[in-house]
Amino acid sequence: MRIPRIFTAQSLALSSELELEESASHHLLKVLRMQPGRELTLFNNSGSEYSAVITAVSKKTATVAINQQSDIDRESPLETELAIGISRGDRFDWVLQKVTELGITRIVPLFTERTEVKLNAERLEKRLGQWQKITIAACEQCQRNTLPILATPQPLDEYLTACTSEYRFVLHHRAEASLNALQQPQSVALLIGPEGGLSDNEITHAEQQGFKSLALGPRVFRTETAPIAALSIVQSLWGDLLSPA
Image 1 (cartoon, rainbow, N blue to C red):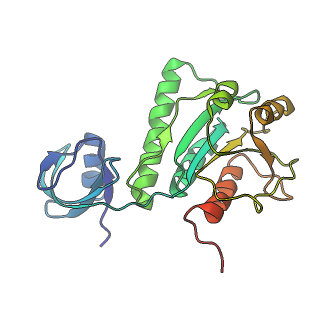
Image 2: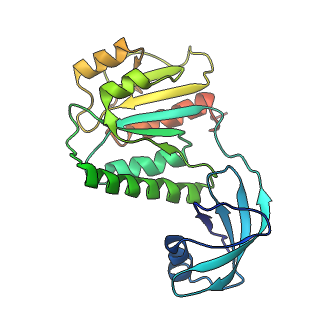
């Protein structure tokens, strides 16, 4: 029987007992139909994971007792950052889920010239909460014990000035650069536009700020496909995804 993994924002310690948050408890009790005595794994972004057992349940919460701590590092040795234009519909949500599974370190949502999504302060706060839940669920599924950093959405110009990754790439289909001749870096940033891509002016500005233009092949990818392909490639070259023999 599969042992569920649950994220909690609370402090965790061996031989302690705690009441889980309402959302986590709802998933365990209403969705998974778990009862006292069932085992689960907890993590709280500290890098460790904790084996626990449900000791009591109420209508809205589950109480668990922690019986083991494991310091398991499943993070990639390569620090990766995805800066991507916010897209419409569920495309952006899908990207967040998949790049989290692929080991992304930091995600920066961007407002670009062709970003059609408009967010006032209230909608932005709500969207950030939704995005954080997606990364948490992805970490629960893929067994990461450390959540990716989710930055506050920002204008492209602001991001270009602040980015300090060792290798910085702006992806667009007109580029001709290759990754094969590059040496092993400590960190990589991938800059990708929303639907319609980045404008010529934005690409030029990125290049002026030290970003190298990069294409992933002869085909033109959608905004939700490009980051998955790019991250898979750099993790295979320099991270912890296995390359074919």
